[in-house]
Image 1: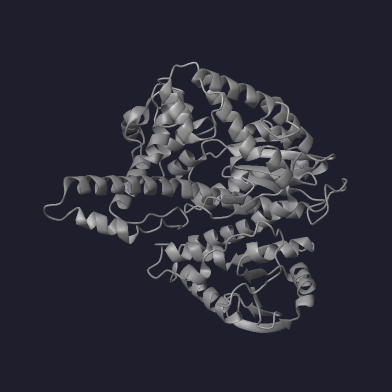
Image 2: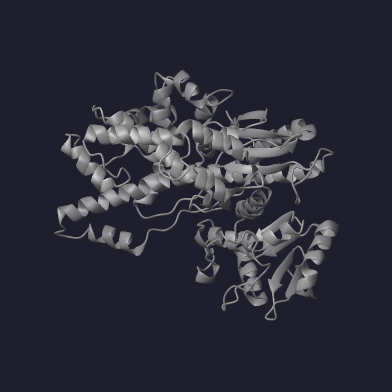
Length: 557
């Protein structure tokens, strides 16, 4: 272990630890010497680097061609170890260890800048935090918190590496798709041709040639005037109405979302030199799922997939897992009957074969309803059938919901715990149990309790799925590094120019950019990594987590 820290003068101090966490050496470095020293040390020893945050320091190292194999990311691990209920005494919360907002205008921030006067990057602050984190990790005798922190730290590196490498993107294909779907881009501004046609049709049917279609208030008033009495302009509500204005209005809204979210302005801002470089936030969701702070990587519409295109001499490996969350539920609950439904096939078809429901659609509604706490509609009607066929799996999510409703916390397979309810929630629940309480207040308190129960019900499943995906990513990265450089033409400048690398990640899907000569080996890496992730989480429990894997030139599926 080697800790990197800034000094008050803006230079650096490294602190080396032995395997027991005892300090054995300190080295002072000038700012100008740091990158070379890190490169040499990484090459010779590949230590685990203790860093404040990969997001704050890794981009500049990558820009200099330096990759780190392993880190302990204090900022990412703090969020886990602060909230975990796996140990009696977790980390004390500290505002100094809250994530900082990413600077979207500075892709590679100055290396190890001291950002505020609290100097949380200082040697003392980092050493104290590292010592406390080691204490919490050691208190978990199962070793699962240690695995989670290692995977989370790897995720921090991967997020920055994917931004540095970028997702190969064909701007001409993107422009072609936009022109085909939206219509020709007007030279002097205004709406693309197809959008303008739908807009004119909406105004015609509403009898208002000057109507501003992007104004929610004005649109509702215009709809009410022609007898379309809806409370919102949401797609699900409008689609229930029969009126000539509805088809062009829904078509306009769909095209408007594409234009605003991923239109020509997005293309100009986010795609440069044939690469889309979004800003990923590992652990950005409380369940451990990733978020995105720029570029909308997690909301890319499928219609733009053909623009994701490999460079000449390279190829894409696109892999995803079908029904990852219900598979995680079966394994967490050790529900062998549900695991059998998932074996070697579509899980929903397996649920049908078990006799729980009659159709695949019913199976999907039932399983999703079980994980998200549905009580009404088709899901609410079908969920009770699952309790008879899969009692262990249903007990796990039902128990998580009860704990949430009671104000308790729940944990994922590796120990990420749900946030505790805030003081307002706790006070409201306490007041609702008093004498002579307003029935409306009791109803509201019960509603909020049920909402929290639905959250904790899903937390354990979604969070464990996020852990599986993290280990999958980390194992893919580790094994790709072992493939070494290819002889093919370099895809781009930088540390990923000649070897296979991760280029995109979305919950249960990865896209790799790979030299064609390494495609078969890289595909095997992805499959092996999935098998390892499953074993590390669930041991020998027989749960299938099959991949849909394709070796393609574009990400269109």
